Length: 81
Image (cartoon, rainbow, N blue to C red; front, side, top):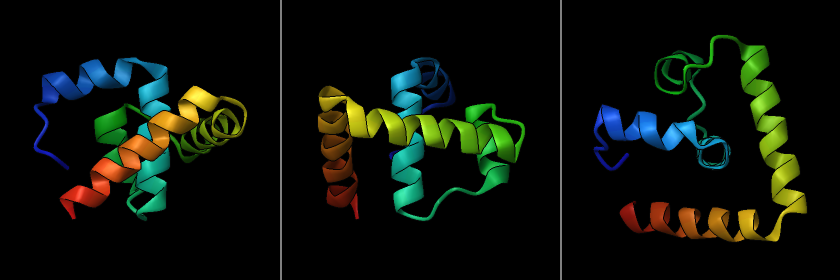
């Protein structure tokens, strides 16, 4: 989205929380293309993607700090549109 280098993206996605946030943002903007996800997130199957998506939604409902990060990330995406 913001021309993030591959190495930096790999580093970001090692953090499970940032991975979940990214999945939620991609879902919100209808960008969950399984082929791209396989390449970028190292997720091999639709089942794994769904599992990560469900975990992210659960975390969004339960964790206040996670929710704040999500809304902050969403605002950043809206600024770039």
